[in-house]
Every structure is written in structure tokens, then in C-alpha cells.
Image 1 (cartoon, rainbow, N blue to C red):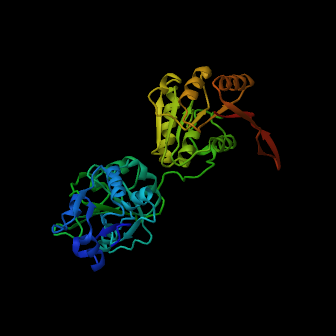
Image 2: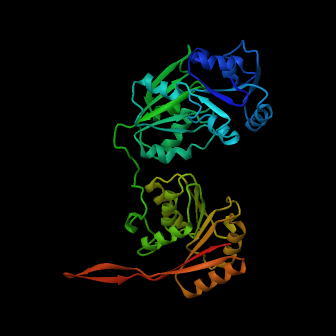
Image 3: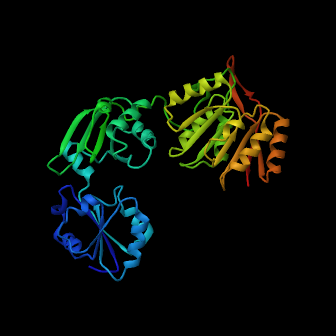
Length: 407
């Protein structure tokens, strides 16, 4: 065992007896053994210093760095340290040359073995110390999913939130305390989990026997206008303009988007497809429009859109700082909206404005320039085919200016 390396050693559900002889010797010879209290208690006869991992990972990393080359160190992890485990964090902080990883049978492997289901077609996600909403889209789109839980995001709580977001009922398994004398496998369905209590150490598996994708509307980029609930005929950002505007936004998976003057919510819906781990705030002052946005959010099953019934700029104060702002309507308050937007936009972010008139275009460019922003203007002229008797002609849509701005 070298003092120049940190050994991350996976412990199987059977505890210390799950280790092969060489891994067992590494733990016993270590001057410092690091791990959760439960894992450390599996080795009562250790002579080395024990360091408990809780919410102190930065302190643990600093201690490892101080003792490199002078003490032999082992880190205990559950199952496979590379599967939602501590290995990713330590490799990122210490470097690949410092770390040696010895995996074991993961809890999830054992869970699938217990319920006698293959897992080569399963998707693995974690609700451990992260919002359950982060996994809703994944659960919706696959037919077999395994979920790591924690004491806050229990199987019952996960089931409740999944049902709220329209996930259909399906087969469900909760595997508790695998490998211990308290091991228990509960086979039920997703909706029944809401009323049940579980031991803290568990994982859950959901299996849908129907189609692989049960979303209420197919997720794609470029949704036809007629798929959306609308305020009235023509009152929607047209597909072609949406496509250009969304491209100009430079959205990432974790973007925070403000859609100001959201109207029917079409831009918010498509932005939410592109920001699966982010958030979209659809800000709209009109009562009827707010109801239409909510109908579209429900139709498309979007869990990462929050509808804000408010007037801008007053209603923007409590929202998180955005990385992208889309302004589809301003209600005559464009100057005030731009002041707040430019002040709150995160570094590297973009503001995209749709303007249907020359006056709005001029006000947008002037307002952005006054706040120290640069602008690029695109004019979108679109014509669609229309059948006339046995012939086809092109019918023009109203032109729209797309203003893209950045610091």
C-alpha cells in the first residue's frame, strides 16, 4: 500500500466480508480510514485513525492533501464508488494519478438481482440531496428506472411528486437494507408507495409495462403551432420565429430563463425541452393568458416551468437571476423591463427580444445600448404554402424583428 495514493474501496451489502483479501488488507493497513459512520463500524478492530464523512467533504479533501506521501489512506464507499458515489468528487479534487478505485457489487445491482429483472435496459438516477423534479422528465420517458433515495426524498415522497407531474401508475419495488438481516423487498405499484413507510436505507425501481414514453405530448423541438392551446387565432409566437429566437438564446441544460410577456407559453414550453436541468419562468400579467399557459404546461407535462402571474418589471424582483431572458411582450414597459433585465442577467447571458413594429425595435435597441449592451438584429420574413383550388401559393406571415443582445 503506497502513501502516494488514496484507495477508494467499495463495500458490498454484506459488509466487511464482501471485500476480496487484497482490499481487506488495504483497509487494515491504512493509517487513516475515511468513510460514513455505518461503513466505519463494519471494521471495529481497525488500528488506524478513523475519520467520519458527513457534510465535511472539503475538510476531508484538505486532510488527505496534508497527509499524502506521509500516511497510507483508504476511503470506504458503498458498493461501486463510481456510481453516484464519492469517487467522482475525490478524483475531481485530487486528480486521477492520486486515486485508486476498487469497486464492489452496487446496491442497485443487488436490487435488480433480488427482483429478478435485468438491468441492461434500465436508467439509473439519484434523488439523493437533489430536487425530485430533476428526475421527472427521465422517469416520464423511460420504461425501467432505478432511483437512489435519501431520508428526505423517500419512495413515498418521490411517488407523490411523480403522480403530481402526471406519471402513470406502474410496477414499483422498494429494496430495503439489502444484504442485512433486516433485508426486505416490497413489490407494489407507484401510487401505493405514497401511503407507505420505509427504512432509511433503500432504493426503488419502477417498471412500466406499457409504451416507453408516456408523456401526454411528444417532446420535440419545433412543435407545430396547432399543438398549443392559444389565446386566439394568430396570437402565438410562430414556429419559425420561435426556432430562430430559441437558437439565439444559446440555452444550456441548466439555464435559468425568464420569458417575459409569455402569452400562450409556446416559447416557455420549447425552452423547457432544452433546459432539462434548468428552470423557465413564464411571466404574464393577463388572467386568461396565464390560464392558457397552465393548460399548455399540463398538456406537455413540463415540470421545470413556473408560471408567474405578474406585471413586469414589478413581478421580477423575487425571481432567481436569469442566464437567458426572452421578451415577447412588454405592455408598454419595455424601458423599465430592460433596466431590470440588464441589471439581473448573469455574466455571459443573452437577452432576446421579438419586435413586431419599428417603434418597438427602436425602443429595444436604444434601451439595450443605454444599459451597455451590444445588439444584433435579424428580420424574419416567413411565407407558408396555401392551397388554392388545385394550385399552391405562398402566404406571408407578419415580419418579426429578433433582437439578440449581450454585454
